[in-house]
Amino acid sequence: MDKIRKILAPTDFSELSQVGVRYALEMAESLGAEVIIYHVVGIAEEWLASHDEFYSVKEFVEEQKKMMDELLRENFADILSQVTIRAQVEVGVPHKMIVEKAVEERADIIVMSTHGKSGLSRMIIGSVTEKVVGRAPCPV
Image (cartoon, rainbow, N blue to C red; front, side, top):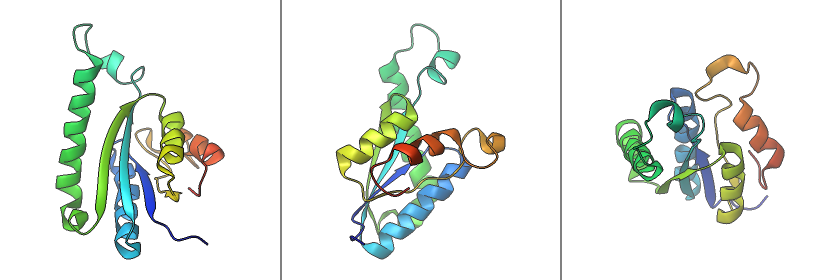
């Protein structure tokens, strides 16, 4: 097995996805790996439903970046200084963007929770996670 040097940790900011981020950070700390904490804004599902036509996608992405920074400070301050991380927010179809990011970054592993914002609506495995598992270029 090759050494794990780069971990992709997708998040949708839900409490359940934070479990996956915590696990990725702890894994990175023990392995000396880098973590890319990655949030994909699914515009059709979130932005259009909650913003008027004068609110730009760019503004929404900036808002999401601030949320990411706040999430990291509030929930992972104890470990952030011990791990090399990059936090990124992009717009697109979540499962496709996660797989593309894994390829682009040459991630050795993707660490994500089995459920996110939809909670237990998909009783066994979340739909985004399920799609990532089926398409990922590395272990999930």
